[in-house]
Image 1 (cartoon, rainbow, N blue to C red):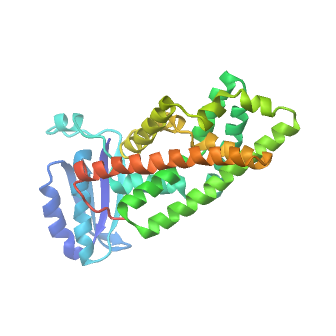
Image 2: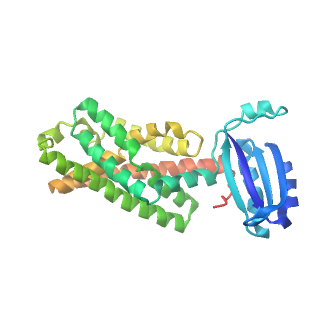
Image 3: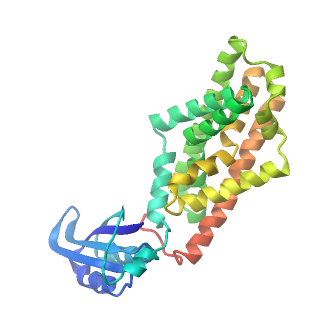
Length: 309
């Protein structure tokens, strides 16, 4: 994936910005429309660049903002042809800049009707899966992990902690708390309905493999969860969103919340604690191991560049 970057820069910074951009090896196309920017006022600079050079490109508007307000829009390019640089295009990197993966996490983890509805539905499907035979159970647990946006707000919190942004941390915490309360509520509601239909019982729970995986995880289960936490942030910070489902399924965030919901409805304090314990443990894996991934990417890929946002 390569990049187009559209910038509106203060007129006083344009010449300096263009000079800096022309020195960046991965800039394959550069154009300027002087005075074309209306809001904010300024010159419009359009860049087509290799992905491996995107941090250097975004450093330019970061410097230009000292002259006044700037506006920057980034987008991926499906294909890019430059006859003098085709080998460099073929060998381009697959890393995502700070601005894009942070915005993606904020979008999927922000409080909205859709976010809250998917949390409730994910919790309900997860509990229905826990009370199902092995094959439907596996399908339902996988579906609940993909449908409920349970990973993104936790990952957003981990990134916010790495950034040491009090504003981002507060927003992430609100998303996590509200979202997970509804996730647990969705699981509790599903258990109430299934119990009323005669499909949920202590015997059914005792025979559920999914329940055993959550409340009595083996070393292999912890390895799967840890791998999912690491893979999730590797995927988010690169252009590989299509395979994120695998990382979500490896974590037990959704079914663990469902177990807590079952415990609340059943009045079983032990079950509540076991569900919350696994939920907090997997969330900690995402925050800690995911944070390590983000720090490593910051040092090795982004070279400590401060994002524009």
